[in-house]
Length: 437
Image 1 (spheres, rainbow, N blue to C red):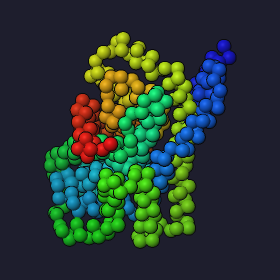
Image 2 (image 1 turned 120 degrees about the vertical axis):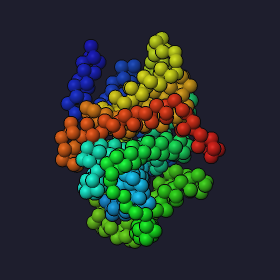
Image 3 (image 1 turned 180 degrees about the horizontal axis):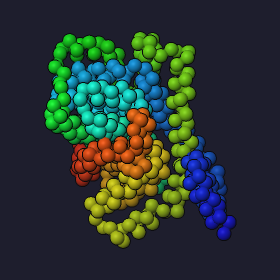
Image 4 (image 1 turned 45 degrees about the vertical axis):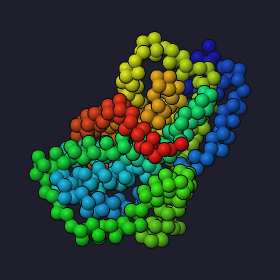
């Protein structure tokens, strides 16, 4: 009876807005205590988390992303994309998609992209005769478009959580960071291509003026962004060329970005801006690590009690087909993505679905890309998708207006999700081609 009352209290606290880590930690403590297991097991998980080498990549990549967001990188990135793609019908819309995708890959948080690039691109799109509805939908959608591209923070976090869940269950799924980086490239490009095709079609129908291609513009914009252009190539070339690990790439990225933005471009000041950026970025990192530490203890309890195995047995009574399971998984993950932020969703949900999906013979790398694509779409899903509210605030439009503008893009992304879900080679071909181990 006492346990039931505590459980009801925790549910009430969750609905009242208590921090997620406190609820997860309390549930873990309650569960271990009810089973007569020493609650120090949770502290052991915190220690094991602190010894994970991949953990170092999270604060370093987050810091680098925040530095880029606070500098004039967004303006230089848009100018560069405009020089290369502005001549295409609907070229400015394609520029917005490409710029936001690249920017989100480094910042990891969709809200940052909408706030940093949305305010820059929205007036330009309207000025260039794109409709308000089209522009709103485009920028709201673009806010989470780059989550499948390295060095996306959700990819790194998924790798950590999935590996830990497999270890606790007695089997280690092959979800290393460098493999996930490779697995996300083709599906990420598919999303950009599908949305770009829609943008080109809109540009032709609306007779939006095109910007003639000019080598002079290319040279000027490339020269302005000369120190930022090499960054993706340094990261990917270094990792897949075997020169350094993903964790070492994070350190190199953070150092490179700091030097470039502070000492070369001088967009930020070392003793005033950088401490503020460090503080803001580490608030996000601290939240992720605290939730992750509490959740890992709870994950061990769920594995010890064979909760995923029991869930699989229950599901299998009604579903024997892998295809049907994937349909239901997508529906479930879209709801999760709509209700939770991506970091909390990864930490809470992945340990439950990894064993079940593996039992249905879904490759863990493929599952990771399905998972993140769903959450990417979940950000846009009405009625409570996070991007809808951020865009409403940033562009000063009613949420209902943003929802209507976003619906065509959601349809296109769902179409891409079907391909990503049922054509595993989109995620796995590059991993095999690069012979990653």
